[in-house]
Image 1 (cartoon, rainbow, N blue to C red):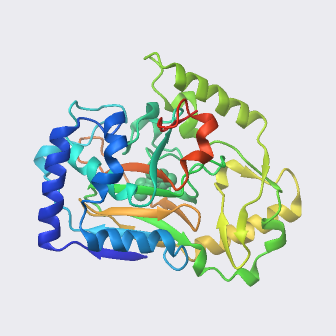
Image 2 (tube, protein in one colour; image 1 turned 90 degrees about the horizontal axis):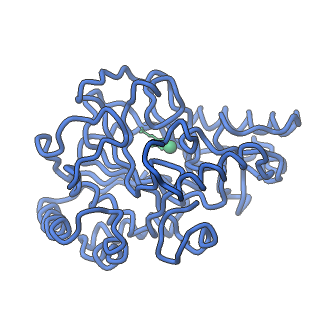
Length: 338
Ligand SMILES: O=C(O)CCC(=O)C(=O)O
Ligand SMILES: [Fe+2]
């Protein structure tokens, strides 16, 4: 993993930028902000931009990038919400959201799904009682199994970005990087073939969405996910270069369609990924970008209290190529994938 510790004068300059952006814009979802994000990101300190650029272009040997040193004002951000859709307007965490969004924009363009968290660009990752046992960002009681984000789709993001609001028990985000695997021990031929069904995960189901507000795009996207669950296309788990493969895998939602050989190849890979698992314990203000093609991620289990003091992260998804999803977005500038 790459890491950068921001220096005092870099923090000052970032806080100046965040102040100015938060007086000019009121939401990351606003088309005006999304249009300006690229030039604004160029106002981040050069050392940070250079390191993010290295992370983007040298996609081997890193897997994740940690940015440390942004201060978070505990009073200002307020308690951890009880639900993902509990949002203050203007957002109390807007400055942190802007920092996450601008850093993400150094890697590509922000993108989101109409079928997840009501199509917002910045998601809440926090424990929710009714999802306590789930394999969702809102679970807590069980280990969140190592996975690729949105593995079901060719439009899956290239990067996942997290910023920590609070994490009092230093619960680990888990990571496993493909550069750490002994590829010679894997059945590469089978993993590179279209032998697998990867279905949309539960975050894209109606049960994870807030259905009391009318949202035509969300409802259309949820129907598409239902179709994809019923009839998923066959895909390969590995693609790209055999010596440094890219990965598409979300174990609870992936099956080998009854083929024993394919199931065994996947089991061998899962075993190795778990064997090489590392963890990063995010502190308030830490930003973590995960390479969603070269690494898998998850989370250690923890006991949630649901009293406003629980672990709380914000999340964005980044694509290197918006055109890849153009046919599923309503306009060239819209970031919501149906
Ligand atoms: O909670 C974490 O550290 C990671 C959660 C996760 O996998 C996600 O938000 O996609
Ligand atoms: Fe995830």
